[in-house]
Length: 302
Image 1 (tube, one colour):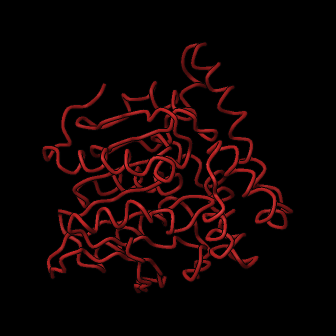
Image 2 (tube, helix red, strand yellow; image 1 turned 45 degrees about the horizontal axis):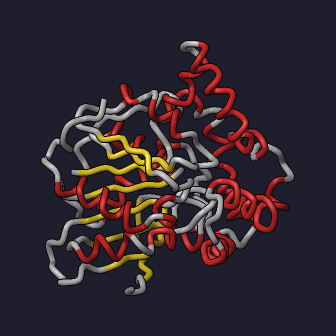
């Protein structure tokens, strides 16, 4: 497996660092694929899908999002979902992306995918969101039938960290206690030894850890309405692990009407939150099929 190369891209107000996999047959007009990590993670999470897409002829770029790794804390101190989505749109422009470009995100990266589809649905040709449904789905159990309320209560027990991350002392225990515990509970049975080493490197400083926590602190306060109003503005391949200890797949299953026409929703049996690491070949095949489908993304599952 080819190792990625580090790059840095100057965006308005931010120098974004990334890992990149060049296409197997270098071509000046190779289409762009942007792969976006979540929390708590790093671009190395794409070590399986990145080379696979490069072998298909894509220029694959996996950024360290605001706060993480060499990108570091944002100079403007902003981590709202609109700022994160703006970075991806600016990255597309800076790298001369065109209408063949692909956007893939996991966890907070998936949130950014949903935000990009809502803000500029035609910028990327294909969108893939892993493990997180459209954020608007998370509030539906509070406003729908009693069955959905019970589902919401089950999910709330898994989402305790949203509130925990608001506490001022969390940063001190993040690397050595909380993050390893999240990986164990969110992807049961998966050996995250290699991944945790990358996460510790990406969040090595207090400023980086505070920035990662700011995703929760800012978006659950002044960014609440915008975040939880997000739904798909373009066709998306939405994949969830059946055994995800972070996000119940049923939340996404019951909110498929929030997907745009042409979307596809699928649950991967035996996979947890980091399904792209646990089932790399299966996820790769699903992504391949999505990329090879008709321009509209094919028939919706709803």
